[in-house]
Image (cartoon, rainbow, N blue to C red; front, side, top):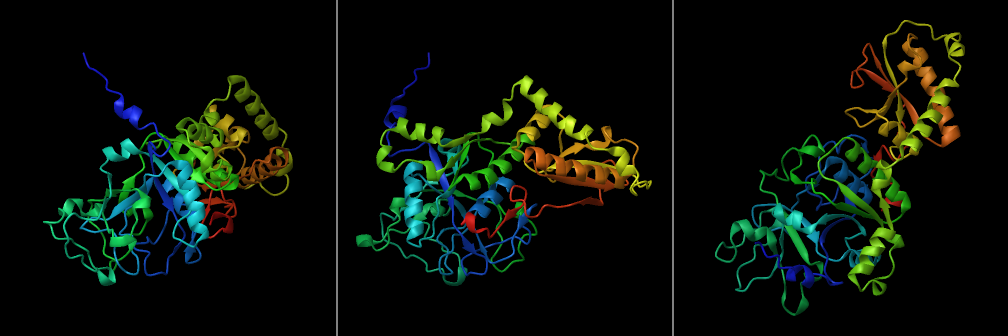
Length: 420
């Protein structure tokens, strides 16, 4: 018979410990000396028009790409990751302590923000992440690594495969990063040099794939949470590996001195998080009612009027209503009723042909535009059209649409003031 020793679990039930690792984001200057590798294209729906990009942009980009990029963490043109392998860095701080520290250090102008991904510690450990090593027992020569040069410690001081874990610790507090309680994950893939051509796309930058169960997100406010929610629903609706359990709104978390007990911390997370299960647990009655309301809107549009005002061409193709808010209750009801298709660019598409069959593509586009206006007016549901000339394939080319580039749920803008 197996005997379960739960002493480790009991010993870990402390307010200063956490079952999570936190990867926080900070604003970066793409033209700065310490930025590292930046791809030519960040990914679908990513809009970067200036050199300074926000922490929330970087968070959303990681969620969308399902990857945290491995870096050398350059400071003043020097690697702070030693050895032959770049790394993804984490903090082992409790969630409430991280939020407090992130806000305080950001106000001081330090390179930190309270915007972060929260990953289950033991799952990340199983992928190879380990606690940092602060200083060495025996003195050794520490390479300067000027101008982005590698910083390799003597192997008799620390094996090459473990050098990614090394963090400098100076005497008398001259250099002390122990407050970070840092963990690191090494990327063993072949790496690009700072002088190489950048990757053509963000998905080609090596890093840690976000395929863990029970992940979470920390943001500042409800507006940021709504943007992140849209990204997470897309991942879940397209059956991406891994899952997110919560989005924590930092501005709602009580002060740290009120969260001494682990149970209080857990309650605060639950009470101030967006419950993602809500978006999949509509009752059958509610799904039916919302689908009927949507159908009533569709049927109320005068099709004959559209046919008589110049849309009688014979252009062939497919036309869809593109619902741009994955979290809206009507979008959810249509999706849960299997009436929504999601194409390769993660657009939530409803085929209007069943209601307006036989008309020209131009007429169906006009029909869809009018439906968009009605849905926005009646339900505050944003939408546009998506059409493909000469094909009924929703991923076909060429396709046409009225792209809502100002819609922050679909497009991840790098420079919105609210996202810093």
